Every structure is written in structure tokens, then in C-alpha cells.
Image 1: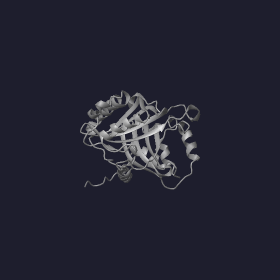
Image 2: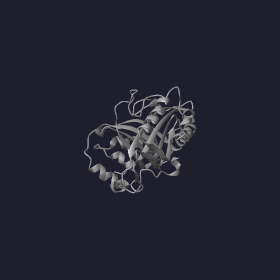
Image 3: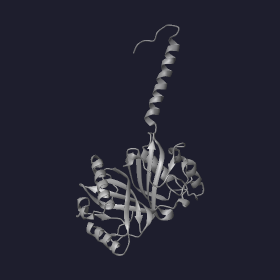
Image 4: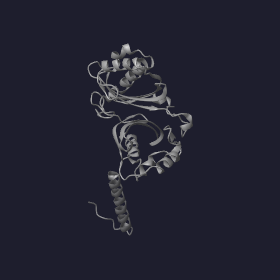
Length: 296
């Protein structure tokens, strides 16, 4: 240890050095214990968990200037959302259960069950610079378990095969275009596993043959389902969500189909169907679709 200088300024120098050292130490402590920035996915989950509750602080993750609302029951902009929430009864704790969540670039997808209205919901959020700037969703009343005992939201949640994300998105995109848009169901086994196909749609049971027979039965009964436009394909690892527009028994419809892919084939499926409201019932002019090109 070096001896202290005998100069008249030595006390001032020593005091300054101590203060600087203390400042550096406190700064280091502050850095080590600071809260890390939340991921976009964590922010989206926090926003959904807060809706309908008395805690509105997570709404700070929504852009004040850029927020575009595609839910047709809510006016566009953050002010429209706040006005909608202001008219809702509030509860102390969340009533929704987010079952699945994944990210794809600037997009976050969630799959939830909401107890308050017994509904199953897919939400899509688009982020810019850490803030939510756009939102889409589709909602369907939850049904009883299907013939295979599966609900519209139970099943596998673990995200795997991250390195295969783009391959799995390509597979789902080609499948929707081939089977649902073109109607070439004779090629179904090229995309869907014949060994394991777990079905969560309330109208069908497990198995590829069950699905194909179900479609034939619908046609025989005079029911029609038509996919017209594929608007978005978003995925992470083994989960891929496809958003399409079409008709069901003549009703303009939004189709949200979530697929789980394993070894190059679709092995599990969840979905939500929601009717597109007529123009006179819409609270905004943004439409239920109108995705940026980055979503497809």
C-alpha cells in the first residue's frame, strides 16, 4: 500500500477518490440488481393478464401514438381500448388463462381460455421498438370435449425444434394452400401424419381418416366451408398459426388454425372460428385481417 502524500491537497484528493469509489460501487450494485427489460412475449402476456383487472400498468407496453386495433368490437387507437376497458366490470385478479404463447420476429401469438365468457381466444400482437402497435384476435365460445375427449385448448404446450421453424412454417403454408384453398384433400397425407393426428376441433375426433370422413359428411349434409385467402403464417419451433379468411355455411368467417409439427408432418390441431361482423356493427375500419407482408 502506497503512503499518502503530504501535500496540502492530499485530504481533498483522498476524499474525492473515496467518493468516486463509492459511486462506482453503488453503480455496480444498481446494475447487478436492476430489472432486465421484458421480452415482447412477456409484455404481451402482461397486457392480457391485466385486462379486466384493476391493474392497468401493463398497458404502458401499448404505443400511445401507433396502436392499430383489428378487433371489430373496439375502436382503434389506445384511446379506443381504454374506453372499451372503462366500460367493463373490473376484478382484482385475471380471469384469462394463457395456455400457449410464442414469438415470431416482431409478432407474439397467444392461445387463451377466458373464464368470464367461457371463450377460447387467439391474440396476435405486433411490436415496434418494444411497444405493441397492432393487434388481431379471434374468439369462439368454448365447446365440450370432442369425440376424442380433447378440449379446444388442452394438450401439448412445450416449444421444441426451434431450428426447424422456417421449415415448419413452409409446410403449414403449403398445406393450407393445397388442402383448404385448392381443396386437394387427396394430398392430405403429404402434410398430416397418418400415425398421430390429435384433434382439438370440437366437431372432429383424432386421426386423419376421421378428419377426411368428417369433411365428406359435412358436404353430404349440405354444409359448406371454404377458405379463400391465407393472410398470415406465424410460428416458433413446432407451433405454427395460420390465419385465413373464407366462409362457413355462407357466413363471412375468420379461421385461426394452430398446428403442431413433428418430423415434417402435422400431428396436432387447434382452431377458433369467428364470424366477421357486418360493416354497420364494426367499431373501426381496420378490418379483421390486413396483416403486413411480414406476417406471411
